[in-house]
Amino acid sequence: MTTKVLRRKFVPVVVGLSLMAVSLVAPISSVSAKDTPPKPIDPKTIDSIRRLRLIGTNGVQQMDPVTGAVTCEAEMLRWIYDTLIRLTPDGKLVPGLAESWGREGKNFVLHLRHGVIFQDGTKFNAAAVKAHLERAKTHPKSVLATSLKAVASVETPDQYTVKLVLSEGRAGVLPILFTDRAGMVPSPTAVANAGATYGATGAVGAGPYKYDKHVSAVDFHVSSWGGYWDAEHRHLAGIDMLGSATELQSQRVVSGDVDYAAMKDIQLPEAAAAKGKNLDYRVSPTDQYAEIYLNWNVAPFNNVLVRQALMYSLDRKTLASVLTAGSAIPAFSPLTQVSWAHDAKAVDSLYKYDPEKAKALLAQAGFPNGITVDVGMIQNTYYVALSEAVQAMVKASGFTFNLKSVTGAEINNRLYTLKNLPVAITAYRGSPDPGLTLENKFMAKGSANASGSSVPGIDTLLIKSAGAVDATLRAKWLKQAELLVMQGAYSIPIYHNAGLVAFTPKLMGISKGYTTCQFADFVSAEVYFKP
Image 1 (tube, rainbow, N blue to C red):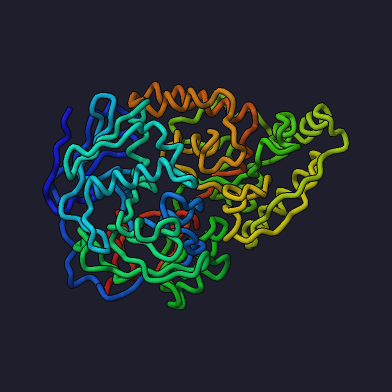
Image 2: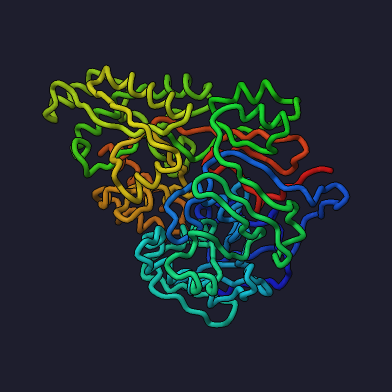
């Protein structure tokens, strides 16, 4: 089936198929945008020379979308790169640098936007996408290699068509992959010039903002540029990510020190109290979950009985209530309770809070006197409170946690790259597609799996799900995979976070809350300041 290619400069973000529709509701052979642009915003209502100042997460460490392992960097990278496909705040997949896409037999085809240039003047075309995807598959430090493993080769029938020849089915997940790092195409000229150092001191993409400067893991600054293909729908002069903050975010918005702040869900009462004092806020459910991260190939957690004991040691409802002002949802799986891939009947009843059961399992595992283990604790108020609460709770089940401070800037690097921190109390962002969450966390080369091995039996299920577009089949296989994970206690989830953001009322277009990791969408959402 041939996919229609559209020639208009702008394809609106308000039209498109929802994520559920693309990956689940019906078999999809192709997707294309509709030629119905939204009503434009009156330029007189926009302050187009104002820069957005925000706080929420640490600054960028690595600007190469292929090698960067810190998940929270992705939202900042899309300011520079844009993506082949966009995911809107309301969960729709819409055209980005690709005007349309779809399945062609067993393969997958992208039809690219015409007339786009990178920030260094290089033309954006099929050759640039091919170079990016091949580098993502072969770079020794690539975090995308596993996700793109099924791409046997990349063909370019013409300047604006990219054909992915697949060795196995991936039609179910490729569109959502291309809304993230896999869809962030760097200038091939910039990559060639920088060589192995690309992304360390600069980045060149085809997105709405060009790189200005940054201090690694501290801040990040970008500015608008004149060659952007969708400049009429970009309304900020630039964005200044001023770094992370763990307290006083509301006060900084109210005072005018910053325009936007991503906050922790426990701070909802603080945001609500400040509403109307030069502050508005949004709160929404998210895919992110707090967890006791563990490398299941490192003792003592290479023993399934020890992992299961730890699952029984957590009173999730109490932790969610006390630590998040009741906004979080107790988690018995990495997948949210409302996920179409979550089997609540099979999974949610596996591990009720039971300290005596936990101690019995530890004894059966050979630890009748309990276990003492060093556990990483992120150095900010929220994670210290969470870590200390978990430490106190699991003590009754025979676990003694020696908390070791780790900075927020180094936690992901130590967990997933250096792999020298086998246990930590942290959070995982999750993916809008539950299959990708399970792949990244529980397949051997997943970007968030430091164990080096897959959960036994999970590879076959996830591969089958990724290749399917039938809703019933995808849900069936993912539920089986989820059950394997939780029966073996390869994940120790605590609760799913709510997303909370506070912002000045002059900032328009903010429709939902985000976590401090994802923190915002300033590309597919049309965000601007009132004069």
